[in-house]
Structure formats: structure tokens, C-alpha cells
Image 1 (cartoon, rainbow, N blue to C red):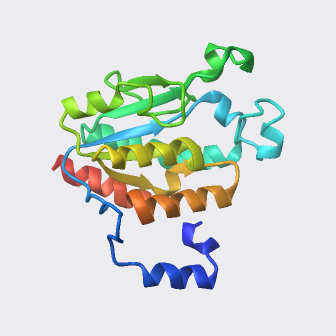
Image 2: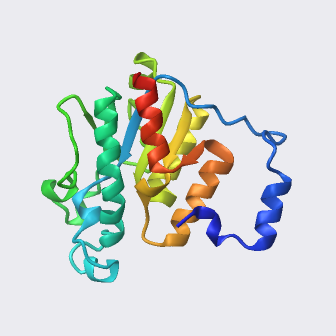
Image 3: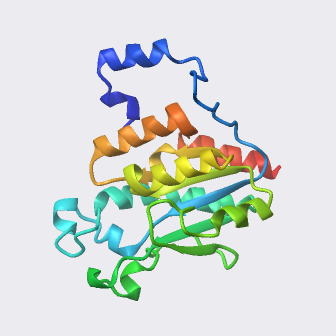
Length: 217
């Protein structure tokens, strides 16, 4: 579902009236460049659970998102394949829960079925943003990266905070709409709207795949 489908008529009018960017005090969104990286945020087993409705999935992992996650994965997998075909680096993050979570190494590992390459980086983090408390920014700067493609979960938490930090660090931000997910559809919609209005660009997944192919040409 498109993120703007949740907007009231008055919200649409307000956005239309302020559509010209930048507004006073806001940094203009950067346009995607020629050196992207894909940041696949927290595609972990305990956040997926089983491919069943979320109210059933949480019986196994209370953190899981069930079928919502797997429907996003159907779009994520071909995008990761496109990134590898274009020789675009892929960074997977894993959020490491506290000792009291009861989760073991297998639970926090990446979900099965991802198109992974031996050159992909797996980066562990303790906070919402992939940049906070990690060396991700230094790694990207050393590689000359100018654009981050942010996907994964949760849309309103780790995806949004990573997009915000990326924009503040000077990277262009692109988020493939169908490749992010959350427990509540409204949370996903609001997060995507926030990213698109303030920090980056929300595109259809097919558009992002075409962009990756273009930079590889």
C-alpha cells in the first residue's frame, strides 16, 4: 500500500502547499549518486518467525512479524540479487539483544533465503540506527559511497533512524517501498512518508533495481 493512502484530505493539502523543497531550516535532500551501497536492516530470524499472520507468529517469537516480513522478503531477495549483479556492496545489520532476551545465536542470525555473497558485510549493532555505535560511516566514506539504499525492518524504528543518520552524515538516501516492513501498516506508511518528505527518496522496488543497473552500466 502506498504510504500516502493513509493521509486525510487536509494532510494532502498541507503537503501540496509545502511541496517545494527545501523549506527554511531544512537541508535539501541529496540526489542519488553513482556509488551506492545497500543497507539491509535487521533481516533476522526472530524478527521474521513463521510465515503466518503476525498474531500467530508471535506465539513463537514475540518480536516476529510473520507474513508481513515474508511478503517484503519476496521483494528484498530480487533487489539483493540486482545489487550483486551490479557489484553494489551489501551490508546486513543484526541488532544484538540483551542477555535477558532469551534469544540464542541462531535466533539473531539472518533469515534463510537471502541472496548472500561472500563479499557481503554483516555488521552487529546495539541501537536502532546502523550508524550509531558502529564503524559503518567510516567504512562507507573509505569506499567513496555517496548513496545508501535502506531496506528491512522495522520501518518506524531501525530503518527510519538509519535513514535519518545517513542523511545527516551527507549520504543520499533511497528506500524501496515494498522492501520495508513493520508490525503495523500505519507505522510503515508514516515512516516512509517521513523519509520521503525529509531525508531521502522512497521509490518502487523496480525503480531501485533499475537505478542499481544504471550505476553499473
